[in-house]
Image (cartoon, rainbow, N blue to C red; front, top):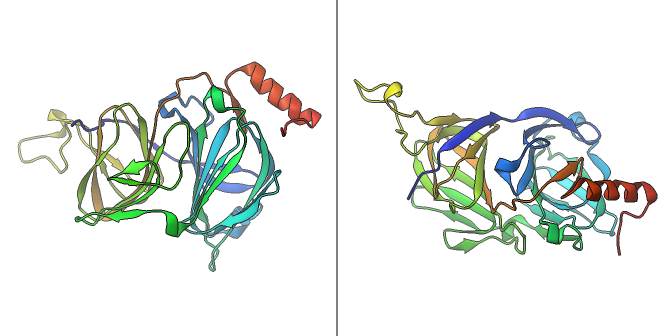
Amino acid sequence: MSIRPVKRIVEAKPTIEGAGVHLRRAFGFGSTSEFDPFLLLDDFRNDIPEDYLAGFPWHPHRGIETITYVLAGTVEHGDSLGNKGSIEAGDVQWMTAGRGIIHQELPRGDAVGRMHGFQLWANLPASLKMSAPRYQEVKSNDIPAITDDDGTHVRIISGSFWGTAGPVDGVAAEPIYLDVSVPPGKRRKLPVETTRHAFAYVFAGSGHFCNASAPLSVPTEGVSWADTTPPTSAANRTLVLFDRGDEVEVHAGQDGIRFLLVSGKPLEQPVAWYGPIVMNTQEELQTAYDELKAGTFLKD
């Protein structure tokens, strides 16, 4: 077994999206080849209602899937197909935009005004860019969770982990999407198939994501960091991008650590991307925006 080395660690950057929603972006809207098949990850965490209530008014999507995971508050949604609903704390909405959909998302705080969730964009392969839109909406109680003997707790949103399958299925990139909590001071190895691209996004606590040859503590007397490879420290609102290997190793800090662990099979296809539409060629992208302008974007 080989531990995945850490390629780099990135602090999520403040960004404003929609009608003025203040959020943090871990990656997106640049070269995302190292994250393939994923395109973007936003952390919309806020306890100031004025910074999120305007939400994300009506906007189009084509060629991608959006995965929304709520931890606090609710997100109300509606779309051009007549679908309406809301997802609450612990719920997930997996929307396949396919050939085109126009929708809106309106965050609402909990009883004390807190809003927290994530939105991940996954690319669709060329063969499914123009597939029919669909939703997979999963309530918190339907998401399996496993607690291991050392107290490590994992919610399995998508894919199979430790012999348990998550409720979201039929996704082209076969993603594995986990919510992982490791107790204070504990060291844990988590399997990730070698052929997948993988990242972790830390949103509570802190810890070390260790390189293949990294120690897990301060070197003993007579040994310095110059003699070895130091572990990579990650805290709240940081993303860890991994290189190849078949395990991720984490050593939780004194307050424990909680993070999303996401992996997927690379599509290795060209990306033509502007705003909320992602196609394979500039011609396809131009067609999508021409159809939006002409009122022919939505297909039967």
